[in-house]
Amino acid sequence: MPKIIVAIDGYSSCGKSTTAKQVAKQLNYPYIDTGAMYRAVTLYFIQNHITLTNPKEVELALNSIQISFRRHAELGRNDTYLNGINVEDEIRKMYVSEKVSDVSAIAEVRHALVAQQQRMGKMKGIVMDGRDIGTVVFPQAELKIFMTADPLIRAQRRQTELLEKGELVGLAEIAENLKMRDHIDTHRAESPLRQAQDAIYIDNSLMTLDEQVELVVRLADEQIGLSLRRRNASKIQQ
Image (tube, rainbow, N blue to C red; front, side, top):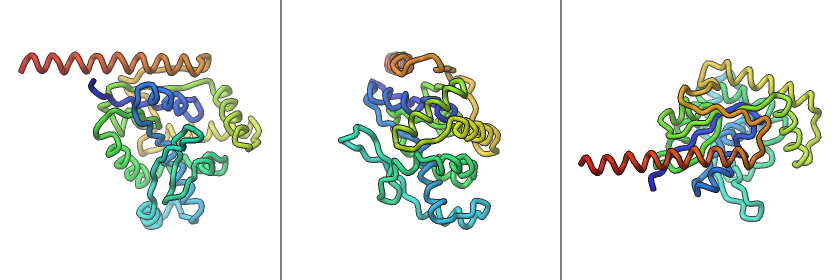
C-alpha cells in the first residue's frame, strides 16, 4: 500500500496530539510530536539562560541541542529526549508552556526544527502534528487537518492534563496562557498558525476522542485509496 503524510495543525490544547497518536497507532505509522521538539528547545534555553534576542546565542544553543524520541514500553508512549535525557514530563510543565510560543517564533529555531522534521518525513508514512505542518513543513501532505475547540474546553482539557501530572494550576491562569499563545502563534512573522487552503477543518469541542480518531483514520484511508488508484493508473499508462 502507498504511504501518505498526515499533517494535523491546530491551536494549543485542542487535542490534536492525542488524536494524532491514536491515528498513527491505527495506521501503524510513526508519530512525530513537533510541539515536544519546540518545548525541548525552550527547556534548554531556559536552563541555559539563552537571550532570545541574541542571534549568536540562539545559534550556538541550537548547535548544542539533540532531540530524539524513544518508546516507553511500560507507559506505552513516545518520550522526548534532550541531549540524551528524558524530558517528557518536564517540558509539559507550566513554566515551559509560558515561554514556548516566544521561542517558537524565532526564525532560527523554526528553520532548524523544520529541516529536521522534513528529514523525518522524507519516506512518508508518518503522522505529524504542530502549527505549520500542512503549510510549511509538508505543504504536499496528502491529508491535512486543521483542528480547534472552544477556548474554555481547551483550558479545561489542559487543566486535566496538568492535574494528571500532579500540577495544580487555576483555570483562569491556563485560559490566559492559551490566549497569549494563540496570539503569538497566529501573529508571528515566521510560519504563523493558519489553516492550509486544502486542510479539513475539525471543531472537536463536542466530539469524543474515539470520534475524532475514527474521522481522521477514515479520511486517511480515503487518501491512501486515492494514492493507490493513481499509482495503478500510472502503471497502466506506462
